[in-house]
Length: 314
Ligand SMILES: Nc1ncnc2c1ncn2[C@@H]1O[C@H](COP(=O)(O)OP(=O)(O)OP(=O)(O)O)[C@@H](O)[C@H]1O
Ligand SMILES: [Mg+2]
Image (cartoon, rainbow, N blue to C red; front, side, top):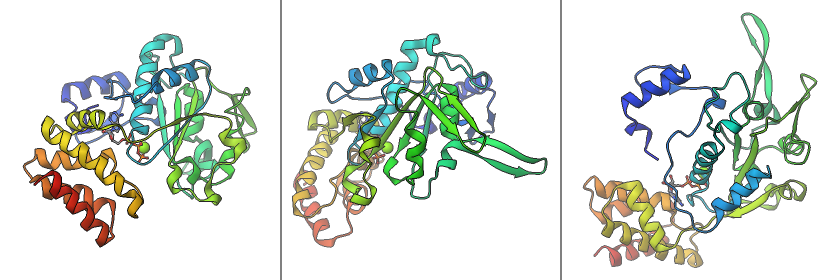
């Protein structure tokens, strides 16, 4: 997928007209349930995850994605929302009148954090000059619009959020809004997708079994060198040779995990290094600021990584 900065003006204009978005020259703003992935995101599969997700979607079985940072979980959800939106087309077009029936599947993403409450997801009363009014939260909007609701780092959210998602993730497919006394039946296209990084979790923050056993789970890991080089080359625009060397660097750094490195270099940091190289920064310096310093503060491990960098980029 192209970075936002590369979106051509004519395309933006087209989207604006189509969506009636609030825009100015520097940014665009759309309602959360109207966000759809319009262009095919670049995604390199590592196994049968595309087929599994499609099958889960057809059966409306919620999906849990787990894996280390930068292994493509978010990109995968974007890709699948584009792909399914394209496949089912008008058939699964959002049913809400707020959402244009254009055959796309809305993708509502919520970055979960430790202060995230059920109200943040479901909605709340707001006080303004005209009195109080109810504002739907992102989960409610996704349920009504019939899109994918992606709860990123779901274990971070407060425990009351699980009470909310349970009826949505079993045969009931309902969302209860206590404050309104309403129960909403999810639109046909709705699917809940959650992700988390098992590496960061402690016992306190692990998902309860009654929650995790409501999802099919897909595990993500670092791609093999060949696939990673392909991803780096595409995403950073760096030449093939440097992309291969960066992928090799990633694999070697991941081996250092046994020597005290908490999390290996993600594909994301290798892409950053590639981007700097493309801009004319020397490979060693790009790896230092893009990779080494980003992944650890421990001087000893930094030295070990620097040695690996020098062996690959002499
Ligand atoms: N399989 C893949 N195909 C294409 N691009 C990928 C793939 N895996 C990783 N990337 C690239 O790496 C970047 C990071 O991936 P992404 O943001 O999807 O990781 P993530 O698993 O969601 O990480 P986090 O847990 O930190 O949110 C993407 O923006 C993309 O450029
Ligand atoms: Mg992510």
